[in-house]
Amino acid sequence: MKNYNSPNIYIVAGEPSGDILGDQLIKSLESKFNSPIFNGVGGERMQSNNFTSLFDMSDISIFGIFPVLRKLFFLISKINDVVKDIAQKKPDIIVLIDSPDFNHRVAKKVKKYLPDVPIVCYVAPTVWAWRQGRAKKMSEYFDYLLSIIPFEVNFFKKYGLKTSYVGHPFIETVKNINDITFSEKYDLEKGKTIIFLPGSRKIEIERHSPIMVQVIKYLKDQDLNLNILIATGQKQLDQIRDYFKDIQIITDDHEKYSLFKKADFACASSGTVTLELGLTETPTIVIYKMDKLTWFFISKMVKVKFVSLVNLILGRESSKELLQDNFNKENLINELSKLLSDEKGQKKQINDLKEFNAIMNQNIDNPSENASKIIKRLLEN
Image (cartoon, rainbow, N blue to C red; front, side, top):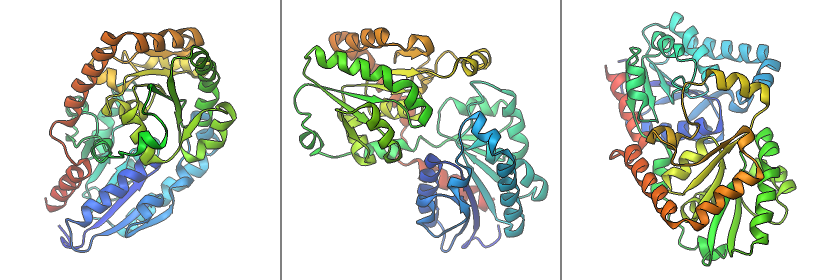
């Protein structure tokens, strides 16, 4: 390896979750080398380290088919800028975090210019759910995959891609949640606590919030002595407030995770948050609604039975899923009523979540440390 004490490491992240992973990874790698050099693309978290970003990550944080199509030529130019920058800097290793639509195109192009430089994929795309043919293609331009989902190891190895499960980054967060004053601060010491999480994207909030508002009104009218809260991000706060006018809203990440640990139940939009709730052992009803045309095509292409990662990893429906037309006021009230009244059902789901945690943890204390050890080994070899 060139410059073992000062490796040139190129990292690209394209969305907030990737920025967090990148930040944790940089800190861990800095402890393993004397003077590592970090370049690439990242957000505020990554740039708070000794990391030089080619441009701000927000330039490529674009979600959805139509928004991407509208900025297609802009994104292609950004991909080319990153590839050119990598070719000029000639890093010792490249780590591409999530954002497959952007990063996999970067990997494919870079492999032609720098075939001997190892390229690591950190966080796999959900090719096991749909478009499974992409897994074989990934093995052509990625040298290693750092997975955050246990069952992905066997799936990708079938396609010739070296893969290791390093642990989900939220495992570290859960172990550090210790806010003993949280319940007192928000007056949650009496009654059951329910969290509603309508989603992080504008369209998710628009589709999910009206039904949640109706259900919250119903629960309040029943006088069940419930603590009802909303958890969201700071960027979504104004939109959330338009819907949930009289509900306590928590936006601070530390407090949000304290709430996850404290809550008795949750109703959450499908996504990473349902896995986070699983790791805090919070019984959850998973909901999701998209436009009918997208749902028609997705439902034809998807190869898995569930949308919730908790259910996928357990191989059964532990968390109830209410999707598309099944997500309505009557069904959500019915499922929440079951959770509230059925102590046997509550215990079963909590036991399921303990099993889920055992699968996810696998004696893993620090996922970013595991990831950095593998990257160090690749550099040494």
